Length: 157
Image 1: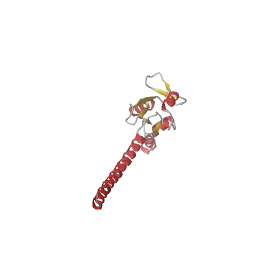
Image 2 (image 1 turned 90 degrees about the horizontal axis):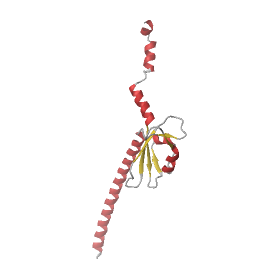
Image 3 (image 1 turned 45 degrees about the horizontal axis):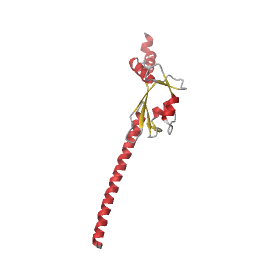
Image 4 (image 1 turned 30 degrees about the horizontal axis):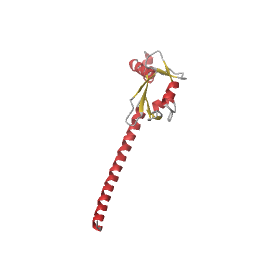
């Protein structure tokens, strides 16, 4: 192989390397955007989301799960769940051990993902019931009621 052939082969290799670098940069940008969107989605969800790794350790939790469970990152989920949840009289609902509020949690989990992890969804059924009741029977708007009472026209009646 002569010098010209080597130079041409090197140029082809350099172009291919540049194309791969640009493609990799583009993929990194897409991953960054998707990660940001996922973080926003997790933060917005009212239900607790717990992401488990292949060994069953907590890899990530959203704000709702953290509010329910505290900081459980890097904790073995099976061991934690066995001590954290107490069965209630309602099938499929669990109380949080040691908590005084009336939280009733339903727990569902995905099958193992391609990476071997799982996602656990914690839904506060008691909070959902209260929210539904408040929508069905809204309280009067105290500010509007106070304004109505304090207007001179109402006082003269």
